[in-house]
Structure formats: structure tokens, C-alpha cells
Amino acid sequence: MKATRVRYGVVAFALALAVLSYVQRVAISQAAGPISTELHLSKQQMGWVFGAFGLSYAIFEIPMGLFGDRLGARRVLAQIVLGWSLFTALTGAAWNVGSLWVIRFLFGAGEAGCFPNLTRMLSQWLPAGERVRAQAMMWACARWGGAVTPPLALLAISQFGWRWSFVAFAALGVIWCAAFLSWFTDSPADHRGVNAAELDLLRDAHSMVSHDLPQRWYRVILQPQVALLMLQYFAFSYVWYFYITWLPSYLREARSLTAGGAAGFAVLPLLAGGFGSIVSGALPLSWPRRWIACAGFAATAVLLLFVPHVANIDVAMALMAAASFASDLTMPISWNTCVEIGRRYTATVAASMNMLGNLAGFVAPVAGGVILEQTGGNWTLLIYTMVGFAVVSALCWLFIDPERAERRAPALPIEAAPQL
Image 1 (cartoon, one colour):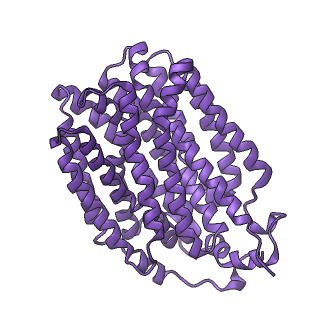
Image 2: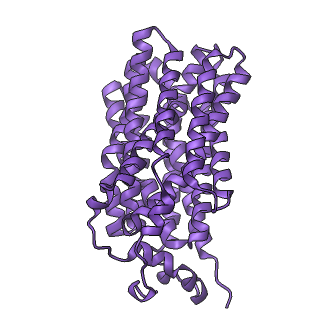
Image 3: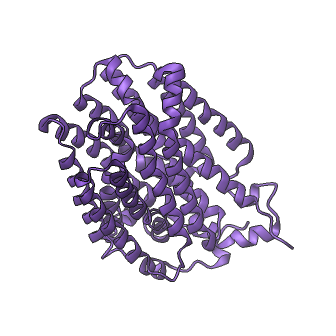
């Protein structure tokens, strides 16, 4: 019997949500100019608004991962997508810095469970050979969703104003949620389109994330390998958050571009990052993943070091795009390592890693705002801090070994798994 391909529909839903989540979170970077003008916000205040998302995302990551491990991805994803879409719409109702900060904080709380629960969902629905490629595609689509957002947001703002643009972006989340609830099931066995051959193909994947392990969740995340995984993701995210927060402002102020020109160039790092994820997923599994990640971050540091000293904007943005490509080689590697280490607690380990990543989403824009405010707009110093964090990530991967974690994971007999 030939296996059905319902699992590819699950991948399609994951890719669509990855794009949607980044469209909704990146839109505010393009709207920063008109928001600051209308609400009379300084650079430092706008940095705090950018950081509100990362702070709440970090705080709610582990609770959302635990909910996914205990309640299932279907229930948790449906609730959080509806929640964050509501606060996306309410962004357009902000009237001062305080209201905008609170709304963005609550928006971040909703998005916190997105990728840990998507990782769990893919782990349960895909065999090991397809899992890394799916992670690569998911992160590529996330980056490309972020890449198309600056021109898309600029178009929406020019047509409808920044307030109604956020309402339009929110409606996309409601549409996704309705389709997802009508089609998806947590267990492949409960899906009417899955035949026996596909169930057999997915048995090992389902057992890995469903079987109870002897240790408790907090012992899993206290492992040294998990701690290093979290640290490297914090440092990686410190660099990456520049692309979705301060980059349009950098292009307008340090490079003297128009709003349209800045929107065009702001696409490049996210676009290149998506290709980095695709390339990483296509590399042979026999290649040591730790060395790919280490080399990627080392290249990021070197490339960013030259950006402030290149006068030609085309060359400077090519260097920044190449840096984003190099660092995003690690994205499928990092998230697949969560599966290899976490197993039953995949969403919890992924949430722990992403918690530190989004703590950087709070620290990076706030630190950027302080640096710019205190130095009179010294963008070079801000980029140098990104170089330093890229070096930290590279050093972490000298000691993280996902292959060793996979070898040491206890083998689960088929009969121990829930019968599909």
C-alpha cells in the first residue's frame, strides 16, 4: 500500500503560520516612522516599544511550550493565533507610548508559543528524514515572510494609514485559524485522510514525542547542552533582531535613503536568511552540524565587521545579507537539536531556547535605542555589539554536539508507543 501524504498538508499549515507570524511582528518596524511622528516618540521610547514584544515572548515561552506538550499543538496553536491576531489589530488603536507598549507586550505573549508548538507538531507528523528539511523550509518561509513585509507594510500604510494596516494583518490570522481547526488533528491516527501505510511511516516519530520519559521537564532544560543551546540562540537573536527593528531607521538615517529605498534594502537580510535555512536543510546529514553552525556564526562576525566601513550602500547591504545567510545556516540545526535533546519535551526545550532568543529581542532593540540616544546616533557602535554576539554564538557551538545527544537518547520500543 502506498502511503498517503497528509503530513505534507501539516507542513503547509506550518509554513503558512511561520510566514504570518513574521508578517505581523515585522510590520511595526516599517511603521515606526509614522507611529513615532503621530505619537511623539523618541528613539529610546521606540526602542522600548520594540522590546516589549521580545520581553513578553521570552516570559511566556516555557509556559506555552509546556501547554503544547500537555494539551497538544492543535488546541494551543488555535488559541494563541486568535490571541495575537486580536492584539495585532489593537496596535492600530494605540494612543500613546504606554498603550502601545502594553499592546505589543500582549501581542508577544500570544506569539510566544508559535514555533515551539510548530516544532512539536512537525516532530509528531514527520519521519526523521523529513524533519530537518521541514524545519529548513519553515524558517526560510518565516524569513521570507519578514522580507516581503517592509514593502507590503509600506504599501498598506500609504493606502490605509498605519492604524488600519494592523487590522488588515490581523484578519489573516483569523483566516488561518479557521482553516487549521477544520482540518488538523494532533494524532495522525485521528485524521481521516491518513492510511495505514502513512501511520506506519510516522510511528517512530509519534512515539518519540509521546512516550513518557523518566526525568521531569525542568531536569531536561537544566542539561549543559541545553544551556549552551539557549546561550547561542540569545546571541544569534541579538544580531537578528536588528533586521526587524532598527534596520529601516539605520538605512534612512545613516545611509540617507528614502522610505521606499529603505524598505527595498530591508528585504535583503531576511531574504538571504531564508536561503541560508534552505541550504542548511539540503546539506548531507553526514556533515557535522556543530561545525556548520560554528562556521556560520564566525562568518557573520567577520562580514558585519566591515559593514560600517563600506561607503557604497549596495556593497554594505550585500555584506549584511551575506551575514544573515551565514547565521541562518544554523536555524534548522538549532531547532532540530531541540527535538534530539528534548524528545517527549520537544516543545519545552524549544520554548526554553526561544525564550532566551526573545529575551534578546527585548535587550537588543532597547540597548540599540540607548546607544543611539546616548551617542548621538552612533550606528557603528551598535553594529559592533552585533559582531561581539556573533562571536559568542560561534564559541558555543564548539561545545554543543547534537549528534552526541541523539546517540545517547534512550531507544523507545515500538510497543511502548501509543498504538496508532
